[in-house]
Length: 149
Image (cartoon, rainbow, N blue to C red):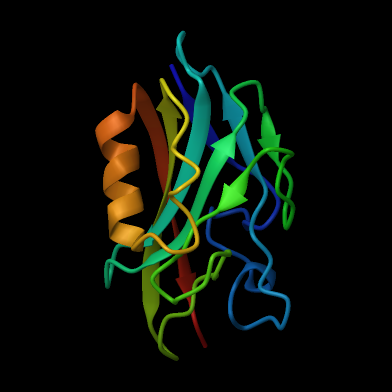
């Protein structure tokens, strides 16, 4: 069964650390563990959605199916980032209003065919996310929170 686990960028409670958020000038993407893609997986893809306001913060496509980890702030060879709801084709970390806690769902998708290269920097983020959900052989997810002080 496909698995997605927390790596660098999360504290002992499973919440994001500030380095992976808008409260740090670098706003690094977190490290993640990947295991057991189903047979027939041609590529993996990843999304991060703020469950409080439904904004898409991160879309990563083209992750090779043999990938076992995503290192913080690095793309694996062959992967690319797609347009997010903040208007960028990159990772934009958690950034709730001051004094609020938001929850972010990270989802890994196992895809039987590669997402077309046409999906990317100009495709509306929701269209890309719907494409991933519609094609997936399986998925794995977890939710991480961030409280902005």
